[in-house]
Length: 73
Image 1 (cartoon, helix red, strand yellow):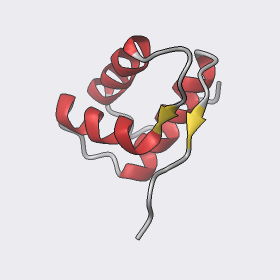
Image 2: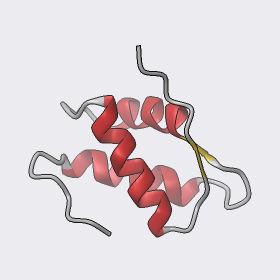
Image 3: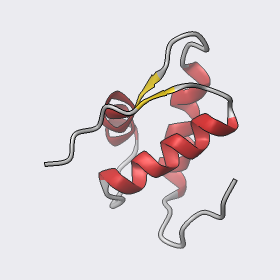
Image 4: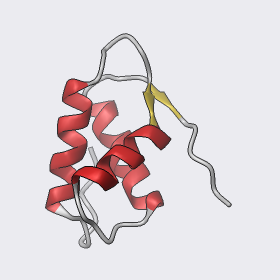
């Protein structure tokens, strides 16, 4: 796993970890759903892109498949 960016928010990392730990091992992790849930669980200044990056890295470390369904406008 690569080093975390300097601006990483510990609360966001914890929220992502909790979300992924509770997620089914069978179905892929929806990035858009994960971002929505993390934003409800933790107040963070991280952008959606930064959260997406952390979610993908964390899911990969847990050997979870990921559904890349975030929408960039």
